[in-house]
Image (cartoon, rainbow, N blue to C red):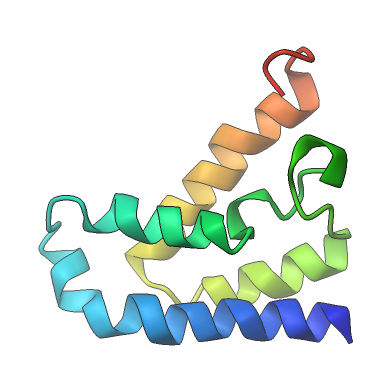
Length: 101
């Protein structure tokens, strides 16, 4: 049930925060993408795979997959999200020292 709740939270985020602003996102309005990423971070979406003791949600792989599937409907927001979580966060989590994590 928790997995579906997180998936729904991600879908709600896309519907409420991303889809209404697609034209502004496509026009690369200054400050919009950082603002969306900050809102996603406030919900914990940027740290789903990060353990709770490091400040993340610490969800399992299946939950992360369901969330990513929902967030994938976010057009170019999905690219920014994927870059942040996949290219930025995970390497630090896997290979970073204690200070970096």
